[in-house]
Each structure stands twice: as structure tokens, then as C-alpha cells.
Length: 128
Image (cartoon, rainbow, N blue to C red; front, side, top):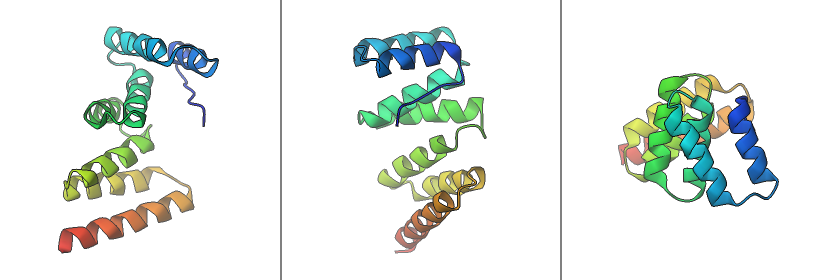
């Protein structure tokens, strides 16, 4: 799935990436934008996704938490990814809280059922 953005500056940078631009240079442009405009939720969110995709989970979590702070309801996937990260760090309570919030923000029943299954796993892990 190709990432898109509502923010014209972020959309332009993502288009470069989609059109075969060098990934690292493109991501650096996105990072520059995020540093110049720390309130740019789209830049923060996409940097979080890229960090996640490249296994930089600490950076991803920082960006995703920033995304949520800037727009608590606009980026449900930020909660889902944070929940997964917290679960992998054995922060089960934080993982449960993040996934419960995610579940309230998505309307797709398949996503809600997936969240329910993950919550059941987390609760089992917590109680063992």
C-alpha cells in the first residue's frame, strides 16, 4: 500500500518516494520538514511508519506518541503500532490501553475483531 498524505508538503515528499526517488534522501526531506514544523502531524506519523518498517522501534514509538499527542483521534494505526511495540517490550498494560483506544477509533469490524483477538492474547499473557 502506497502511503498518502492530506498535507501537501508531505504528499509531495511521499510522491517522490513512490516515483522511485532515493528512499534515504526522501526520508531525510520528511525529517527536515518534521523538524521545521514539529506540529505537522502528517510528517510525524509518516516518519513513525518508516521507522517502524525499518525496525527502528524506539524512534517509531517516539514519533507515534507525538502523532497521538498532536491528533488523538486522527491516526488509529498509531495506537495499533504502539500497542504491538508495548507488547513486544512486555509493557502489557500499556499495550492493552493502546489497543483498546485503537478499537474505539476504527469502524471496520474486521479490524475490531483483530483488536479483540490481540487483547485476549495480551490479557492471557498478563494473567499468566
